[in-house]
Length: 109
Image (tube, rainbow, N blue to C red; front, side, top):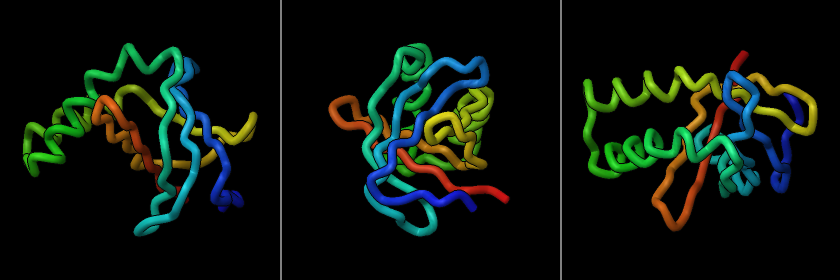
């Protein structure tokens, strides 16, 4: 597993390599690396998905509505990088509450 530390900044990109933003790691919670997300130039194109996902999760809506939005988010093909080093991550989540954006990811084997 790559050595990630609190305080590291992880870049998130879509499958085309467009920058979605950066995640400033602040803590590890339940095995997920978490922190503040700063949107990049590619985020505006997909922000509506994360706003909808955040609302569904906050409202505790489970089942097919949540599954559909998670499939749409998965199709973005999010990858993570520390500098130029690709990181094996999954379960990337961006909690967008408009005035504050948080994110998290987990390492995959």
